[in-house]
Image 1 (spheres, rainbow, N blue to C red):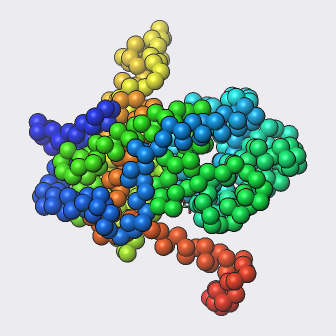
Image 2 (image 1 turned 180 degrees about the vertical axis):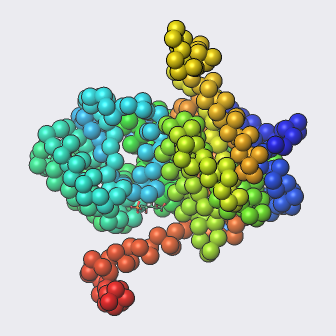
Image 3 (image 1 turned 60 degrees about the vertical axis):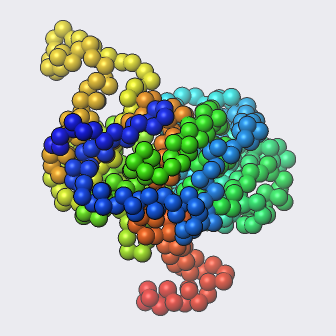
Length: 458
Ligand code: PA5
């Protein structure tokens, strides 16, 4: 266990604290050696002179969102909330994960089991898979119910959401009538191009534009994420304000910039053989935040034969499954823990006269005190077992902290991608499966690919 006397602690303006001490111990020489490179990567990003620089609209996005834009999104959300028991967000990848991450983090864990009602609709997701049962079961749930649709696709041509939207639109029009359905459908897409833009214009849906210079996985703070988050009843102004604060905090290079420090530390670990980063939470509400993070880093960095593999676990749940591997498996991993300082609700462990379960020594303690000791105990065990550990602490799980975290990880991703030597803003590899799928499905225009893939299958 490293000596923590000289704590490498970076506290940002408000509620986020990054501690790299228990990672530094494993790769200090590399971390020191990488200082100039990290500053240069930051400079490349900020000066917009690196690869993919036509996709940097997210850098100043939080501070440039106006009160009018927020008000318009809230007004649309209010219309859907008033008229719907369910709002279905149709989208995949960057057009899905940000909203899902924030809504899961901020909603009651059992929200889905309470009765839906207009003014307090349930936000559901579709088009994020091609599961036939999933789609059919969703259709079954929505049959006879009041629902609305937010269909989201930057390209406007993605197959998964297109299939789901076709089915849900048909159901909505059948139930509400074609005219009324128009008020219950909102499209978020490119300003001019793509099939969804054409469809939305022809049908007369309200639309929101995804800026050209913001890629899917960096788009949660555009209407792509903000509209579904507002529909779930969360405060998007606070989310944006948190992100804007982090934008300010990460404006300058160096050791005071938590995004640069995180990017530099993870690359130092990668360069010393730690090829997998596990994002850890001790709060199940953060499960989908990790899914968003995995997309952000996986799609941004996994290219040219390089990239830290982004994995995630929910603790303590996964200590009873993945814990063994992490403690004693191949020493090629490091952990980044997101820790929430103060849970929103207090629940203490009761005393039990019989004490048959033997846990009276915990009576009177908050459940979170046990969780925090699990967190500390796990960290010590994993570090002792050779797993470097970074820790990001947020005060509370609220809109403000999530906005900060989102921007922190986005900024760090840009810096980290440039340190790795890749273009963090493209995703050429995503096309490979699509090309094969289209060829196999005999999509018009793919005749040559169809012939080639069929020959391979013989
Ligand atoms: O980050 C990305 O660019 C991707 O994950 C996209 O968001 C995803 O493929 C969905 O694309 P679209 O919004 O064009 O339907």
